[in-house]
Length: 241
Image (cartoon, rainbow, N blue to C red; front, side, top):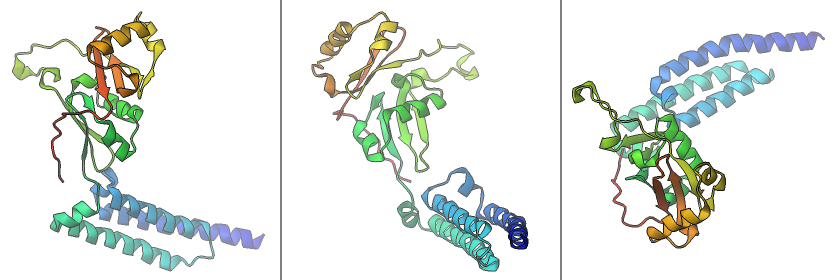
């Protein structure tokens, strides 16, 4: 019984001492490490969590070396961050390059596969950016931190006060009707359409094999958007950090 009480008090004492130290070191590492979490900073956070977690959970681990480890990791992170800022080559080695995944409303499926992103994930990220129709997108980029940046086509951008307070019609929501060759017949029914209509529209675009379609969507105006697998002739801007 005494041993349990002693270990419990020891764990509580470690929490009281290590968490303020961890907070201080996290603030010392800087706002960027928390807000952006590039790959190196992500590894630092994981390592700190593992070190502190082991120290709190196991009373047999010596407490002082854990504190030294936390401080050392924080200083190491600051050193690497300074090095990354001073030397762009080092910085580019320690993170991911931004990747264009949508260009002129066309989804670049091969790039999504390389990133191991699903079309559903990209559609969700676009909705979080208030984009509900891929045709509105001029360029969409998966950034180094895993987030998405979106440049809307000029005609799809909201009008500002500088535009004499003239507001354009609101955008419609486009719903997926084909994803990777699979037709969503329930959505077609919602639009009072059928597979025959869809096949006719694809044929008009020179698409005769459904398996060639990576993604297709339709809006309330019955405007059909199609992105093919292995899209040819798409001018992709080259991006570097």
